[in-house]
Length: 323
Image (cartoon, rainbow, N blue to C red; front, side, top):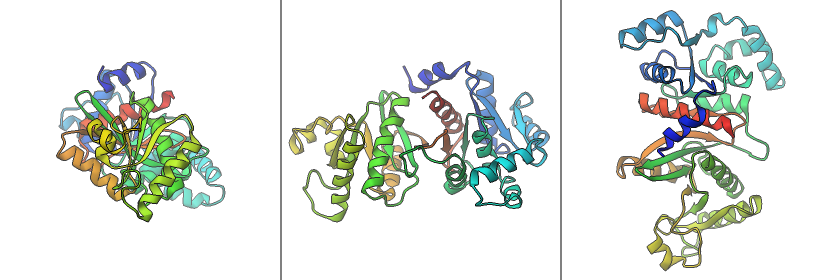
């Protein structure tokens, strides 16, 4: 079954509420109208309801029955300010909180924290930091996870892979890379991706010598210690990780090489370039990024996203609530 048909089957009827802070963006309007019509996810938009409904009608989307919350007139704003100050443990005053919560991403993230909605999807009109910063300050990472990472589901036909980190960490150290790998396997479970992890490098099992290679080899060792049952190998070049023919020549004893489904890039430069090459030249659909390792589901859209991306990422985000 197609990934999204499978996920929709799992979440339909569960009344999972996903907040979309960029409610006045036409792409968000279109995706929200579709989600509402299907009954897959309950979309909640932020902004001025009258203006959003009017603008949506001009482009033939009926949002009249969709919940739209205006942060400027929110009845429980003072309650939210108090909850924010408590969550920040003295790092922000009430006055600062009042200003910060006028930002739709901070406001939307607090809706997630307060269990008013189940998850958040943003980033169509904001840079990654505007989505990630409030998520890290308010939602925070799971116990044992020091940082979040941005994973993409890469899909073409029957092929489905997970690429990480492609959005957040510029140059993770060995410990951080190991945590990213372990959490990537947990993310893959949600989306029916086989948990076979390749730690990528420009070297395969010592074919090159450098600090960068040593980092990946060390990260693989740490990941084994963190999750002894995880199927993981490294360091591997991409061809050895994905091609059984190349793997047979380079690493014949590896159970992962040639069969990997999860690819952990050594740094953000490689990961971001890698997923975009697969997307633009390889014809893979890149869905995400999903922020893995968070206590509650938060997803960051690319600013190049279209309405279809918003729709699909909303479904992915809702599905994460089921684990």
